[in-house]
Image 1 (cartoon, rainbow, N blue to C red):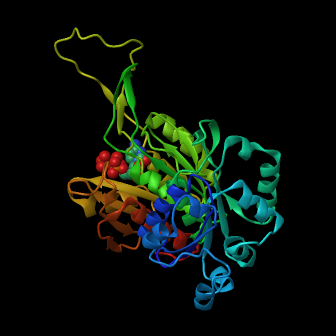
Image 2 (image 1 turned 180 degrees about the vertical axis):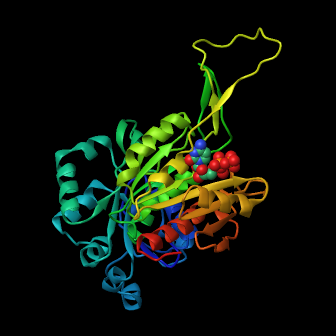
Image 3 (image 1 turned 90 degrees about the vertical axis):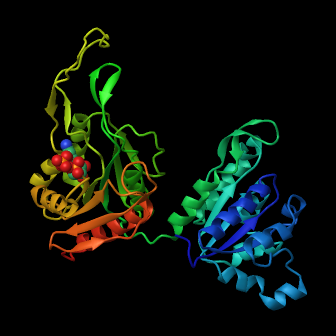
Length: 401
Ligand code: CTP
């Protein structure tokens, strides 16, 4: 997601500077070209050489360095990046920015850049809570800067509270979001994810091994593209992506109710959940004791949520299903596409290695309404999600398939 992007990482002086070194490594791994600028105080914690080696670019440290200014001036450096990331941002750096002070290399660049700025503060909890810091934070927001708030926990100064540099994964995701075009802006979409649990007594249920990873990846990519995202999730123990409205359900009946309540107002629905087709006809009020020699559990069919959505689908709504198959992939998937009145279906061959339940990767075939069959190469579930949303976007824009 960061391939070809230029990121200027401003590092100011706090103990969290050591985490910024790892952040550079992660940004570079994601394909970004990273230029680091350090304040004098930051250099007290970690040397510029560390950042130079990790970023593979010279590190800006001195506004008045004849050598580096002749190669690339601070003004040129301010023009270069697609994003300026400040991690860690100290209370002092934030105060200077709020006041428009430019008295060193980093603050001079900050005043000259027109790139979006993401501030990731890290400091002692009392410094963070101080009215002056909170005032500066408000001013920085008014100036159009974005802030990834510090995490809460134990701090290097032996205190507890807000002030730890945000998790690097959260900083990366926020950076990716800022740099992703908002192609689903103004759209309301719903993704279902995970399995459903169908109880037959208070402590036992029928289910399947769905991890929810495909649905959560779909929600994350839609949120990156600025959609308003509802994630209706069966029990699956994954953290909801930031900015997504997660609605937790347990059974297929709960899932149906949650989805049908929202469906009329949605621009697109992607049913990635592995809904149990059957539920026990009876749910016993107490735990079933191990007395019977043989046990038969009577099942009755659950409603087909996707088919119900297909029946009432507004003309402008895009409806996408998955087909989990172990045989006759194309035939079965095409049949579901037509039977459930879908715009396209994503067919999953569960017998393939690296596809389906629990994996981080998937290998799917997309079948469109016009009969087109597109085999996608094996890829991460996030990449599969991007392919799906690309198609949804085209359909929303009125390009028929
Ligand atoms: N689905 C649903 N409600 C159900 C069962 C499935 O909404 N009760 C949705 C799934 O979320 C998926 C699609 O229908 O998007 C196809 O699910 P799948 O399990 O592949 O097929 P089924 O319709 O259940 O048919 P079968 O089990 O016979 O393959």
